[in-house]
Image (cartoon, rainbow, N blue to C red; front, side, top):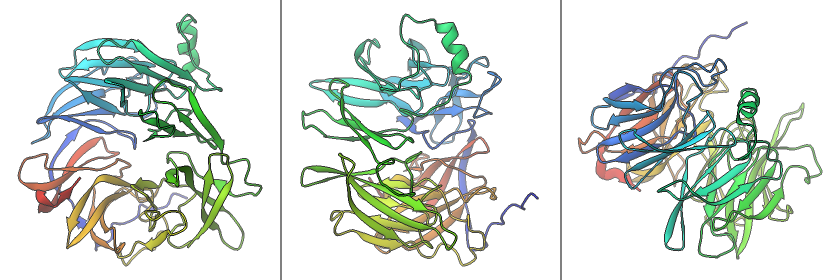
Length: 437
């Protein structure tokens, strides 16, 4: 039987929409790049999975930030999987990969500067790293390739292939590879890494999480592997490790690197949830039990990292004072009618914070589960954990919200891409001075 769609609780305020723009589907890896009054965003087009290799409206969109008017749409051929997720703006150029196994550089008008054939789909937002006195662009593929390039000409600075790499290399038959990739799906360098100094050589390094249970650090200076830690197969129990679509929290404790990762175990009497802290050797340093009412989506839903906080659907764990002095806070005040267990699930938070009702707050988008046709924005206090305000969206979303004053009315607004194919500018109904970077 098909369950009816969940109704929107009456306690949630309808969104005040400044503008909306039909830019196609976006994912949790989609970001916004900006230059002046232009915003740039990648699109997955009408279909997320282009099995028929025919789609419309994907590629990159350039929009007027004041009114959402589409100025241009480029690199969006109907033939070929031209889906674009992450995008980087740097020195009047745009850098992005697509699902057609390519990495591209264009000017802001969409004119191609260069195109690099890659070993697989490029999924995460390109990185800008500084090596010495030079900037490089780093991109990765789902088949297990990382490559640092010269931004001006695309020439390779360094390259790295994972030990389980399964993609194309220069000199191999490109046609046979493209046929194979039409049926291929994996997730090696799929999500954006955590950037941090691992070996203290003056260049930021990249820490990646794989759904196989490995956490790997790659040297940003030369692409060599600094460490590889398996946090899945050495726990000696039947707990489930959650790394897919969500990176671990990576901390430095007295110069030692510590990973904090959610785990869950299903029992007939009820599930058990906890956080585990590992060192880079894979040794468990600490286990932190979690309340199942506030953290029931630990295993099968995405969680969010902000600073030193792991944020779940109805709770957060703050490690600002280290793994031995953590603070657990429940998120309260979401709504009084939470009959559906999927309500307020799969949260993703903005990078920017808001000063609201005298408290520093984060802004979350809750996808609200499979039986909903709407998502909600929650403004939640970092100190109290209380939801200060709820706003409903006209469609579901997994988009990382971006706060600013994009329409230049001196009020805070937020950009959110939804599964109905629209990018929305939502008025947060507070002054732009409330925005804290």
